Image 1 (cartoon, one colour):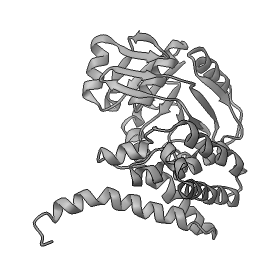
Image 2 (tube, one colour; image 1 turned 120 degrees about the horizontal axis):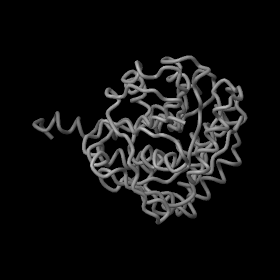
Image 3 (cartoon, one colour; image 1 turned 180 degrees about the horizontal axis):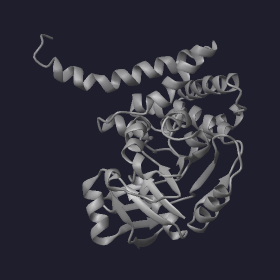
Image 4 (cartoon, one colour; image 1 turned 120 degrees about the vertical axis):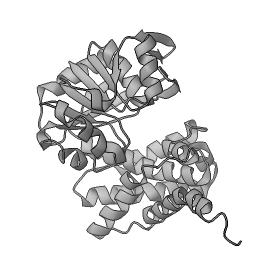
Length: 314
């Protein structure tokens, strides 16, 4: 199977390594020049559960990719989806596109670039760390689920499961993927936004009962919106995920917190903001997600505001 990984940061590179170990012909596509140069010079070095692999993978910018590919694995930030797919439009051919991006609404974004029957939706709980250009690491279970966005079974799903499992990914073709995606989004709406706003961690949330209640209430709004949308997401499973994170992922820094501290744009639009907008359209009260959206956007905007008004009177 020929797989192009579009967005070869920490997660994309770890997946690229595991897919290559599973027998796929992998091409990494990214705009990080230092990362691409390091891979070209010595291959991708991936520490996977304590074993170092040096993999001579093709790596280039999306603009330089000419194909062909059977599958494009999309790992860019959600707000880069349109630009990333546009950059490889001429090389897509008949390739399927699998998104393992965070949030909701990804199928609709991708379907603007290719027929809906070529879109595969998924999620992953795979840990990934970017150590240096050309070097990544992953330690722990790599759990991934996916299915065709239109709900149809296709041979490529079984083929992809086989390649992933051979490469060490606990993969499953799951017809209930929509519910799983909404459950993960509800979890992320709670933990990511609260941690991003407080410089906190799941353990810190769990240590304060009212903070844990806030997280559970945030997620409950997301589940209510999912159910109103006809998706059988489980609030019980999300509550268990939040409790588990609070008890065991004590010092984990969620991606939204990492982005905010680094001055990068967060994925709030695909998480809390998406819940708030869809809830409003369906008549479902979502005051917590609406508030968290505003606060995260304010936190993102404040550094630029301070810089632009640096000479103003106090």
